[in-house]
Length: 393
Image (cartoon, rainbow, N blue to C red):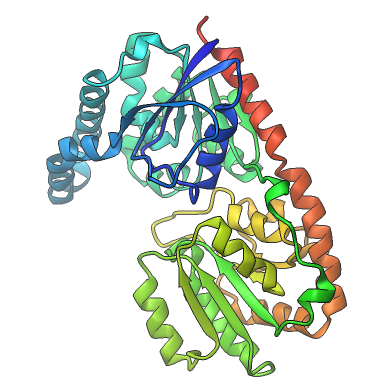
């Protein structure tokens, strides 16, 4: 049996689907013993198999140790970048060495290149092989720091393999200097058994509604959605957009709803678990997501919420952004518009609201496409193969 450590700085909960689902599936595998080092394990996160929690709160402990260097970096600017990263690595090593016997593991799976930068020297010093899963910000906005890019080069050399969820991210990682032969495109997975789409005959009996699922952040640009809804409202006064999610732009979204006169056209549900968000998706007619490159440079890695919507049989209207162009087949499963073009997005949505037969056709094609692309069984099998291939014993 191979002993595998999963290391991620994020908190683990069922809402972190691409992390939670993978660990949950692998925990049921008789060839692997899974140990988890994470930000924290939320109370509702119940894995079906055995997962040994080695260090819950890794990021919190690490952050306390590196807090003063963050402050110093803000004061000193670019001159402090290398010193900041050096301190971050020492802080991560101190936290891990005090809680984990890292040499017991056959391999360490690291989520995000940012985490890999912190722990690379610690893992390589212990002689433990590691693979890294790139996601989004860790290969976009995070690379604005020259010191971070230099450290990435060392991670590229030291890691056994890299996983990306889209070919777009694969290209970004390649251009950052990673050996293309190390990069494996493995999509995020969806469990088809969990998603039972409402039939369109039933859906059409409901009032037409739109839905967006995701964090309220710059790269999701929820305000652009509201401007689209304001345009759609001119032809469909009773249209309703359901927003499922929370985040730093919540107040700006609320203010925009008022200023655009959409208080009766937008329902904000806040962050919801899948068992509560999926019924809202199922009752909608169209899924909207206006992803853009944020001012910081941050981009989507792979829009899992968009995939979940497609699996519910919804046509998708989104933007020409990152891996979304791989998820949505233009004119076959949905439509893509230029980033920030809220008027074009509104036009596509209005067209689908007027032609429900087209919406149904695109939604059904989208479900078939995404369930093949995001097959959970294939994802787990592909990642397991990498874990076994690069284990040290």
